[in-house]
Length: 359
Ligand SMILES: NC(=O)c1ccc[n+]([C@@H]2O[C@H](COP(=O)([O-])OP(=O)(O)OC[C@H]3O[C@@H](n4cnc5c(N)ncnc54)[C@H](O)[C@@H]3O)[C@@H](O)[C@H]2O)c1
Ligand SMILES: [Zn+2]
Image (cartoon, rainbow, N blue to C red; front, side, top):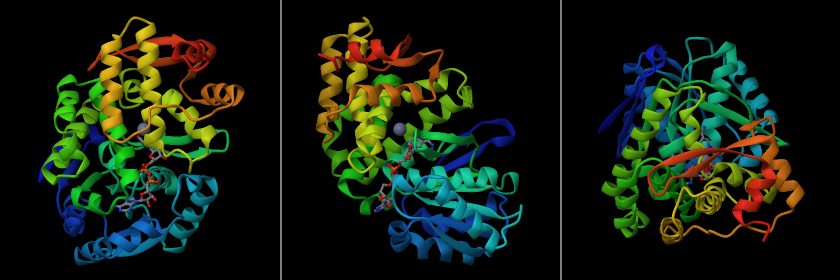
């Protein structure tokens, strides 16, 4: 088992990465000092696959377990679903010594994390991510949120989990589309932060796409290491952490306006990254050759690189509502070639022009 630590003083926690680690979840929760009453928040899809394993593991470690189900889909990551979760937690009698287990992808993780951050002014929670995206990104770092009709993740809190337990085997049941969407976040780390990781991805594309377990374990470990380092240096996103938003400004805008079923998060991020490379080329941060290299890797991972049809005013509105908006200008993350980043303050109109979206 790989064990990483996210060092955040009294909010520090471990990330366990292993095959089959769902079976020992209960033991690890007890070792992490969590209480003996747990609510597992999950959705029907993930519950059918892994709900029993998790319930049994927690029960064998001596925990009383309630299962709280939320509907499957980004469109349910909202205030109404959250309210139902609070009802269920109160009904189940969870107190401040109890803990929440977020079992699922980023939607479950974000919503369950926000429920944990706010229920009784905060109770401990554990992330058990089951999508590639959640294993390499959303389960680490303590960003929790729900969406608002005006935009994604507009309501949330920074609230760190007490443990992240990653079972690489859960990826074997992940639909191909979701797996590929997760690869977009993987590419993000390579492009904006780590050139040698980007090269590893180029050299191992086939093995990754065929989900070779050793390759996946390495990819997940490296992404978690990078994310942990970034979060350790800037837990609440006052500066450096914003680099993790690479590809997300335009990605979120397309995601919001396309409707959540049309484009899943990672697919939108892939398009956002390709547009970010165009902007980076035009601002002199990236060569045409590097932009091409990035688009090639994204394509080899089976992700689309062309933006879907959009309405200019709605896209601008979505960009402006994005929480990175400051005084009308957007802090936009460019890639400095491959493996580094640069930040530019850009007005949304300028951003659209530079990205080539208006040509
Ligand atoms: N908090 C953060 O730092 C952060 C970072 C990135 C993304 N996010 C958020 O994450 C969300 C996207 O997460 P996601 O891509 O994991 O989507 P998701 O949670 O919707 O999961 C995708 C689909 O896969 C299913 N699924 C999950 N695990 C499975 C498994 N092992 N086998 C079969 N099916 C499985 C789910 O039921 C769902 O239908 C977005 O809401 C995004 O905003 C948050
Ligand atoms: Zn993302």
